Structures are given as structure tokens and as C-alpha cells.
Length: 453
Image (cartoon, rainbow, N blue to C red; front, side, top):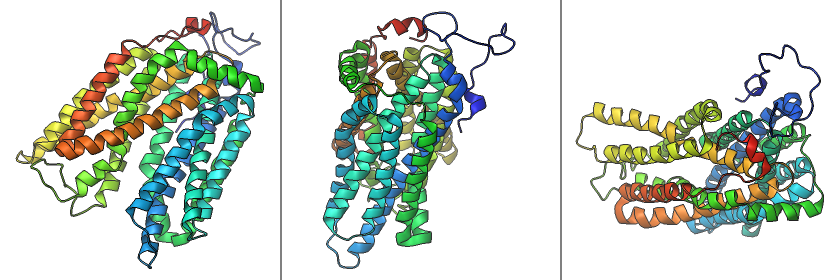
């Protein structure tokens, strides 16, 4: 977990005690911000709040599936089509709301916007369990998606602004932000299922309480988030759209997010749990024990999270573009490892376990792309307004890439099962590496303090 001692900037050797310091201009000399030195612990609080938000969001999705499955067993006309539509509604609401709410964080108080988003999520989760009307289900999922969109862009903008004068700290903060996102992926499903097992319908209230706890943490953690004039939000959006470093990174970001949607969508669980129709080792491997999917996802998240944790210490010391390139190259190696495992049905068990261990290490290497890309995005606009709009664009690209990846997974998975997913991943990694070559470094005056391009 992120702590004050981990984030606290170290004094230069020739400075024995902190004394009065002039604010840094970000160009030369001491680049540390007094805001970071004074409020660094609040960064940890906001990242913890984001982790709780993602856990609550993941738990909510699992609870909804279990709850509606129970209702269908009592005569209500509910099928998988309704579940898929409800998921799409939440995802689309977050997608549509990301840019306007990112702009709102440049014009309104980011602190209150994030608190309102968390409280909206609490209201949405609680309302789902209070009715059996389909209209309420759709409204609840839409509100929950908007609530998440009201938190993520302002939070990323706040983290970017708070670490504006300390590039190593920014790299570490963005790595821990990615870890908090993984916490939701790893723990959300387990928390939701265990809540339902222990508390049944009252589990929705517990998830709502988690959203409220998130709101409280954001209230205290983001007290120093700065507000700009409303006109600055429009100028910020124009800066974000016109910034060459953001535009050039967009194709890379889309390609990598497509890989995320490829593997974390519903296609992979289907391929691992359906009746096998090929000789591939992973095809239908959990057909007799579908519950193992949750533990597989938890194990992957732990490995990926361990990689991000290691990158939080490595990233401040290497160029960000190099870190992204290393991660993408590692993605090819991961695909080779998974392909070898997928065709190891007739190989000794020790060989398969060796391949799994090597692939896990490679997954840790490839995990560095997202924190590196976030650090790049945070650095691109330099100081001033517009970071909320930029992070709203980030959320949109994340959503669009995930949707595209899910479609690719369906097409390639139907064609060649798990091998199809691996092939699609290689093609997307090739695209990402190609576009990475054309990524433009930040062109703001702040670029002079950005040593890690």
C-alpha cells in the first residue's frame, strides 16, 4: 500500500534541514513542489479511495448477476441478454460521461465532484436491490457508470497536478493508481460473492457503504484539488485535443486497451469453461469446475500487481518511452509462453509448470505499460487547466479500446479458440509498437523538467 514514507521526496545531501523554499518554476534547480512535501499523505488516501471504488464496482457486478439469477429461478423473465444489456448500459454511461465530467473537474471543485460520484454509486447499488422493475435496473446501472466517470478523470487530474514538480514521484503514484485498479479486478468478485453468501440481499447495502467510505476518503484526500474558471475547462479541452503528444499516444493506447478488452471480456471465460472442441490444452480446461475462473483471475491480478509494484521503483529511473517499449516487447514473449502452455497437453507436468512460472515473470514485465503511459499523459499538458479533460479523453480511449478488444476476442476466439486470442494479441502489440515510434514528446515548456522522455 502507498505510504507517506514511500512517497516523501528526499532532501538533497547538501540540505541538512528543510528551510524556506521558493516555489519551483519547473525548469531548473529544485523541482520539488511544496504541495507534495506538505500533502503527500493525501495522495495515498485518494489512491486508497480509488481501490475501494473499484472493489465496490466489481462486487456490484457480481452481486447483480447472482441476484438476477435468483430472481429468474423464481419465475421472473430474466435471461443472459438482459445481463449483457445492463453491463453495456453501465459501460456506455461511463464512456459518454467521461469527457464532460473531466471538463467539469476543470471548472468545478474536483473534490466535491469525486465525492458526489462516489455517493451516486452508493445510491445506484442500493436502489438495485429495492425493486424488481427492469426500468430501475437500467437506471441503477446508468447511475453507477456515471458515478465512476465522475471520480476517475478528476482523480487522475488531481494526481497529475499534485505531482507536477516531481517526475519520479509521479511515476510511482501512477503505478500505485494502477495497483488500486487491479485491486478491484482481483478482489471485487470475491468480495461480492462472499458478501452474498454471508448477507444475501443486504450485501448490496454493504457495497453501498463501501462507496460511502470512498466518498469520505476522497473528501479528505483531495482537499487541495484546485478549481479553475469555467472558461478554462473549454480551453483545457482544446489543449488536450490539440496537444500532439496526446494525439500521437492515442493509437498506442487504443491498441493496448484492445488487448485488455480481448482478455478481460466474457470470451475468455467462455473458452475456458465450455465443452472443448479442439486439442488445445486451455480450451475448456475448467469445463467441469467453472468456479475456478475467479481464482485464475485473482492469481493473474496478483502477478500483474506485483509487476506494477516493481515498476513503481524502476520507472523513475528509465525513460518512459523505453518502459513502454519494453512492456510491449514482453507482450510478445507472454504470447509465446501461453502458446507453449496451450499446446502442452502431452508434455510432462513439470515442463508445464516451468512454462507457467516463466510466463508469470514475463507478465510482470509487460505490466509496466499502463503506469508509464499514465505518467506520459499526466506530463503532456504541463501545468494549468485541462488535465481533467485530458484524463476524460483517457477514459474514453480506455472504453473504446476495451469494446474493440471484446469484438476481436469474439471473432478470433470463434476462429481458433485460445490460439485465436493469442494471435489477436500479437497483431495488436505489433500495432502498438509501430505507433509508439511516432509518439511525440511533450512540447510544453514543462518539457525541460521531463527528463524521462
